[in-house]
Amino acid sequence: MADVQAWQDAPYPSVLVGAGGEVRAANDAATALLLEPGGPVAEVGWLADAHDRFVSAPDDLVVPVAGSVGDRSFEAHPVAHDDRSVTWWLVEDTDVRLAREALQVEQGRAALLADVSSALLTSLNPERCMRITAELAARHLADAALVISAGSHRESTVTRCARDGEPEQVRTRIDADEVAGLGEALRGFPPVPSRWIDPASAPGWLAPDGFGDVGSIVVTPLPGHGVPAGALILLRHAGEPVFTEDEEVFARLFASRAGTAMSAAHMFTRQASITETLMRELLPPTLRDVGGIEFAGRYRPAGDTERVGGDFYDVHPVEREDGDAEALAVLGDVCGKGLEAAVLTGKVRTTVQALLPMADDHQQVLDLLNNALLTSHHTRFVTLVLASVVRTGAEVRLRLTSAGHLPPLIVRNNGDVDEADTTGTLVGALADIPSTTATVVLAPGETCLLYTDGITEARGGPLGGEMFGEHRLKHALAACAGMPADAIAEHVHMLAAQWVGSGAHDDMAVLAITAPRGRHLSAVGGHGRGRFTP
Image (cartoon, rainbow, N blue to C red; front, side):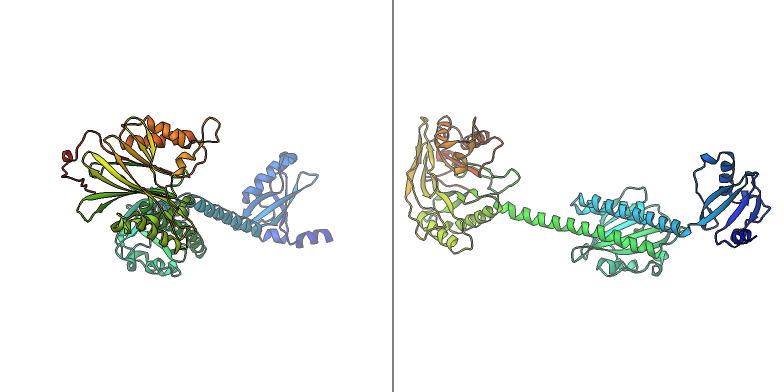
C-alpha cells in the first residue's frame, strides 16, 4: 500500500497502460496532464504509438521516447509487466529542449556571421560588398533588405534585395528624414527600436518593386573603421510577425560584420586610387620622336608584381637662349629597388625637371641635384647619364655626361659599337662630383644607347648564374646597326629578359636615341638647326 501511495505522489507523471492501449491508472502528476484512468492513451498520440510498438516488439523500440504534451516536452521511459501492461514514466525535458533550440538558433546565427565574414572578405569592391550584404540579410533576416552607403550630401548608393531575388543597385538622392532612425544610422548613432517606426510612413523608394505593404522595419547603422559605412534596413511583409528585440540585437551583430567589410573595401578603394594617381607620376613616360630625333625606351622592374623601381628615364624639351630647341634625355639608377627606390626616383626626376633652365650646363645640374639629395633624409645615391640632344642638319649632336653611370654605347652604321668618353662621380654620396662631358655626333641611322646595370648584370643563361655582360650587349648592338630606336630598345630588352628567364633580376632600363635615316631637317618642317615640338 505504501508503494502505491509513493507512486501516486511521485513528482513525475506516470501511467499504467494495458496491452490494448487503455489507461488503467495514472498518478496525480499524470492526471494533471489530462491522462484520466480508463481513457485511451491515444489522446497522447506519440505515447500511444510508442506503446503499441513496445508491446509488439519491446526490443525494437529505442527508448526513451520523446514527445510533447501541450507546450511541454517529455521523455517516456517504459517498465514492462508480466500481463503485457506497461508503466510509462514521463520525465519533463522542456528546459533542455528550449536550451537545445536556443543553442541551434545561436549556432545557426554564428554560422551565418561566419558566412557573412567569409563572403564579404573575399571582395574589396564596395558595391559588391553592398550587394552581398543586402542579399544575405534578405535571405536570413527579413523579407527584404536595403543597404545604403554613407554617401555624400547629394546622393547615396542604395542596394535593394527581396528574399530569393537579385540585388538591384542604384545611385540616387534620398531624404534620410523620411525614415525614422535612418538619418541617425547614417551618422553612426545607435539604432531606433523598430516599435518606434511606423511602417505606414515608409516612402515608396524603401521597398523593392512588387514587395507590397510593409509590416515592420528595422534600421541599424553599419559601423566602419571609426566612421559609419552606411545603414542597413530590414523589412517584413504586413501580416508577418514583427521583429523581436532578440532579432534586432542579431541584426546589429550582422551589421557590424558587414559594416567592417564595407569600410575596409572603401578604404582599399580610396588607397588604390591614391596609389594609382601617385604611381602614374613614377612610371616611365611614353616617348615619341622629338624634332625628327627618335627616342625609345623600355623598363622592367625587379619584381614581377611591381610597376616601379629604381631605374628611370625621361626626355625633356629645353629652349635654348639662341632660340634653338634641344632635348635633355636622362637615364638613371637609384640605389636599391622597389617602392622606396621609386620614391627617390620620383624626387630625382622632379628635381631634374626643375633644373631644365640650366640644362645647358651639365655640371651645374649635377651639383644642384647632388646638394638636393645630400640634404634629404634619404641615404641612397643615384647614378645617371645626361644627354643634351640637338638636330644639326641630317646629323644629331649629343653632349653626354655620366655621373657614376655606365658609359653610353654608340652604334655606328658599319656595326662598330663605341663607348662614349665620359666619366663622373655618383650623385648623393659625396660633396664634390667632378665629371667629364663627351660630344658625339650621330650620322643618319646611328644610335646612342643609354642603359642601366640591370641589363649587363642580369644573371641567367644556360647555367643560370652567368652575367649577360657588356660583351654580349655590344655584340647584340652590332647586329642592330641601322635599326630604328624602338627596334633597338625592344631587342636589348628582349635579350636581357630571355637571358634572365624566370630568375631574379634587378630593375632594367634602356633608352635609345637615333638619328633618323634618309630625312633632312627641312623634310620635317625645320630651318637651319633642329627644332622640335613636345
